[in-house]
Each structure stands twice: as structure tokens, then as C-alpha cells.
Length: 394
Image (cartoon, rainbow, N blue to C red):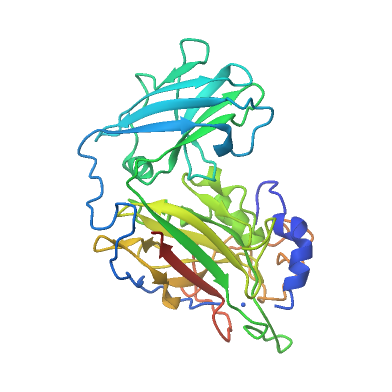
């Protein structure tokens, strides 16, 4: 259950969308190794195919242009000429040096940082910059910490950005993505392929489909388990919110590097997907990177789909080549967040379609985050719910 006053995203904001989906479930729930089609090995068009990825053996320097168009959320009242430019260098040990200059802002820059997040997403501060001239020029302080190995991976995949704040635009007025040119872009498509006959409801002999919720994803390298699922003995705040209510808001702050997907293909606003609906997003990765996601199995108390193998992530490269194709059914599983006691799927009064509000169900005495198979649970499904396709971009 939600132990904080989280927004009831799916039970309130998306209530109308849910009403249309309730006439609507599934996937294999075993923990099997991840095997994907690795594609033909043809050139990806961005210089990453058959090229050794950076081994961090030397200094990498990137020039960055900042403007208001990259900023999220969109700033207000920004002059047309507001801009910035930076040169940032990272050495093999993760030591960062950078000089950032800004001009024509709404007022003096009051803060500047390097954040972690892909273009189109926001993320946490990695390094704070300092200014000695009233906000026109910013540098990395001499005592700044070095990047971790995971953060060096984020740099190489284009997952770091500069953000400059002013009094008028506290969330950020100009932004610039730090793209080292080392990464391959992948389009990820999560498609709901359930039907109205997918989920069997034993108590009344009916069937229904399985709507899926907005969710979170992450690209990572060195973790032995998907960071989205940690700690495994109890759900983090982001996983709890998605698994119980389809609420993605807490994830970016709960898990560093987590990003969200929430708007169905063809839709203008966030919401769940029913049969035929899909989420689609693009990420960047380098060799050695892994991908993981979570999305709520909506007719449940706290179940969700995620990638499943030894580290609950999918390797985005095999033998140096970007993977391509549909993820095997056996490589995706239904998991239980261990936060709310389970009711019969598709019927429970404390499930998101029917509950009065968030944090209304009974706490689950078994707090483990695990596949339902690993917890000795099962669900009766007549077919698949989720199809995931990974496509490297030319």
C-alpha cells in the first residue's frame, strides 16, 4: 500500500479511461533467461555498430548548446536569445571538469547543475556548479565528487544534461543534453495484446481483458538486479506507487536513473492502455547496458509486469551488436510488489478500478518483491497480455 499521500493517478485522474477498459489480461510468469533476436548486425548509421564502445581509458570532451526548447517543463517568458554553451570533460576515473556560459536570460542564473536524465525527461542532480561572476559563467568546483561507474555509463549513453535555473524559472530556464556520440538509440514499444477473454475470473465464470498502466524504465550497467526492483525485501516508493495505482510520479526520485512512460501512442494525455493500445519511447544505450521496465497489471492489488532473468533486465547488446526484435514471452513476467494483500484478480474492492482511493487495502504480510511464481501464486490466463519490441534506430 502507499504509505505516503501519493496522488491517486489511475483511480481518479484516469477514471474515465478505466471505465472504457473494464470490459477488458497476461504473460508467462516464470523466471526464465532473457533471449532476444539480436538482428542482422547491419550498420546502425550512427557510428556505433562494429565500433568498440568507450572503455573510459582517456578523457572525453563534449561541447553542449543550451536553450529553452530543451527545457522540461517549458519555461515562461524566456527571451528569444536566451542561450548557453559548455565544454565538459570526463576522465577515466569519472572526474568532471566543465565551463558553462549563459546569456540573455530573464535574469541572473541562480543555480546550474549537471543532472541525470534522457532528452525529454527530467532527473536528479549529479553535480552542482558554482559561479564567481554573478551567474554568467559556471564551473565544476574543485571538490566535486567523481562520477560513479554507473554515471560514467550515463554520460556515454547521453543521459546527462546541464540545467540552468533563474528566479523566473526555478525548475530551469535553459537546458542542454550532453551527448558524447557514443550511443545507439533504441525505440521500445510496449503493446497490450490481451482480449476480453484473457483473464479468467473464477468466482463468477467471466473473462476480461487486462489494462496496463503507465510505468517506469531504466537503462543501467553494473547492478546485479534491476534498480527498479530494489530493495527486494520491500518495495521502493516508486514501485509501490506503480504496482498499486499506476502512479509513476515517485519513481524518478525513488530510483536514480528511472524514467517514466505514461502517454499511449496516439493519445494527447497520460493514461492506461487496453487491448490494441501501446506505449512507445526512445532511449540511448552503449554496449554493456541493460534495460528494465515496470507496468501495472491493473486488475490486481499490486501486480506488475517486468523483465525477468538473473538480473531482471534485458541486455541491449549481444556480441557487440544492438538487439532487435520482439522480446520472448518467457522473458517477461508478472510480479507482486508485496505491498497489499491480494484479492481475486479482476474483482477485488481494493483494486485500482474499484477502490475509494490510494492506500485503502490491507497490508501484505509477505513484503518480498518477487515473481508471482516465486511466491507460489498463479493467475488463470487464456493468452498473452504484453508484447515488447526493441528496435535499434538507423
